[in-house]
Image 1 (tube, rainbow, N blue to C red):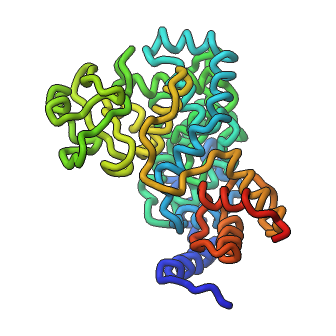
Image 2 (image 1 turned 120 degrees about the horizontal axis):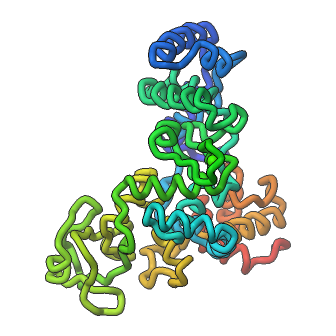
Image 3 (image 1 turned 45 degrees about the vertical axis):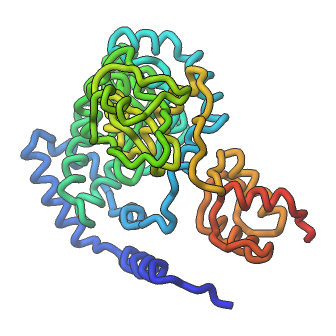
Length: 400
Ligand code: CA
């Protein structure tokens, strides 16, 4: 039987077809000429530009990554389950010990605590394990010449050329995500230009090859984003029954106002803290709720996603010894840690599904295998890698 395609899937296939249309080499060379004029008019030498662009071709896969709309909207509990799992907490403790002296220096110099710095590192690049491998100049030249955000990416390309010209980082180290985020801390090139610091004292700023530079740069970023020393990002709270009052990161109120509305700390005591605060309800009033202060906004500014900011904030708490959130997410199909994602894949492989290796990354083949298993087990076939299907896989033997 042919799988049914809904409208969204058909549109997605069309998008992929469009994205697969090859970009034109002639257009690219014309564009490089324009970029060369623009860059050399803004202080980049012709030597820097020509050395960086020598033999360069547009990278089709970068355009595909830019156009790729995620087929499944990822619920926040999935992000949290994978970004703040036992493995990342244990790895974080090891990094706190390994870099204790550098972190103490960063606390003194920038006023940002070590747990937050390490949590940013853990969420942004899994402590340097996933920094991205795409050559920055090629990716950024591609999206500077094709696609819908050329003006923005030309600024990032120019910043990358300035990094090369400064000698801060060698060309081969400048690799990262398709969009140009790079290094342990996943800075964009323009962010690097503004905020990276030389924290190991070798005279160069290098957030790929120097962990001290990366940690110091993260602390400097947060300080410049308005971090207030020795203040919490926020904490989990309890809502009164049927709460339907104000909420959202931008809606700031005095704590007295939140207290008046019946919001309480998770243990039932009155709210405490300094300054205006916002009430964050990432999954609505039926899920975990948080009172957040200025420092949450500093973390949020790092990549402008509440799910990531909450992951960093929560990981920092876990590294301080706190437990999981007390309120459950409003779902009967909870998210999986990375170890559980690998277990899920191993159980599918044991049933003969060809999904490659169990790497914990849930791609199209894993989702298709889940759908097939769900159908054979009489479950709703949604293809979701969650707690429900993992439980079903654990309970049925491969021979059935
Ligand atoms: Ca350095």
